[in-house]
Amino acid sequence: MRYVDAGYAVALVTLGAYAVSLVARRRRWERAYEASADPSYPDSGLDTEALAAESDDAGSLDAGSASVRRERP
Amino acid sequence: MSARRTLPPRPRWLDPIGVLGVVAMGFTVWLGLWITPPDRTQGDLARLLYIHPPIATVALYWVGGVAVAGSLLYLWPRTRSFFWDRLAASAVEVGAVFSALTLVTGSLWGRPAWGTWWTWDARLTSTALLLLLEIGYLALRRVPADPAVRAKRCAVAALLIAIDIPLVHFSVDWWNTLHQGGTFLDPGFKIHASASMAWTFLLGFIAFSLIFVWLLGVRYRIERLQDAVGDRDFEVSLTERWSEGSGQGSSGAPGDGSDDALVGAGLSNAPPGGEGRGR
Image 1 (cartoon, rainbow over the protein chains, first blue to last red):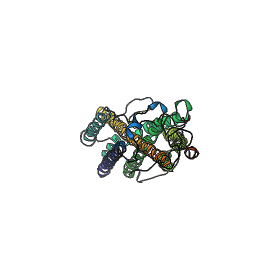
Image 2: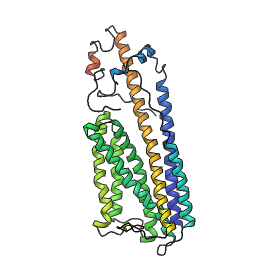
Image 3: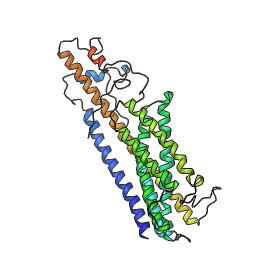
Image 4: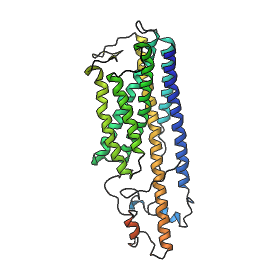
């Protein structure tokens, strides 16, 4: 029975640990996303409210252009 | 400059699926370890078959299906969208975990059944190859590149996984393997097990499938957040560049034609190209 017990234990513990790690990563990235949504982030000296009020029809900056990807923890 | 787009909220249906999966898993473990009778031939060792084939099914068919379909849909210009790329990448990462578990639980079954932890049997070897291909895909994903270039590379890598899936599936038919064919179902889908065993087996499939869906959803959300944070950082960088430019005496307003340096660096607010849209 020990092989059976080990099999169940390995499967459940691995999936549980992976699920917990995913939830932790998601929370970290949600905090990073919320921080980047803060109008005062970063203080560029520009009128961010005016920028935010411009039309969205100009399209996004990311599509089709070279992208600068910053790694966040 | 565009307003910052907000990410849609997390889907509400995802967590209930996870809860359902955990409950189903609990019943599977309870039934598998304590309620179902031992097998006539394998004895208690057969209890591993309530988890090993379901894990393998997820690793091969659900993961393979999502990863390959997502990659093909990304590669096809009409349906190209980073949604498919993110979905495929999420499926491959979850799939790597399930593939590893398939091999481990299989070894734990094989040691007492075959007398060995490992053999270069067609089914085992092709499953190990699947795990290696998934790890390779994940390594390729970490290579720094433009998102569209990265997505294309990974989509092509996923096609190798597509080739391995039928190898794994038909390995027990094409080659003279140690690994048996269907345990509970024969090719005519006739069940060769007692009712409690068959129902526990089915419950195991449902449990692991639900857990896979939940893990995939969470992993996809992480991909989406990473892209969104990257996009915002990019917008911030661009805003800073423009503000520097206006501070240094150029006409300064974005898009007025004087930002040749930005154009040359590919950072202008030019209309988006065809590839990589749909984020």
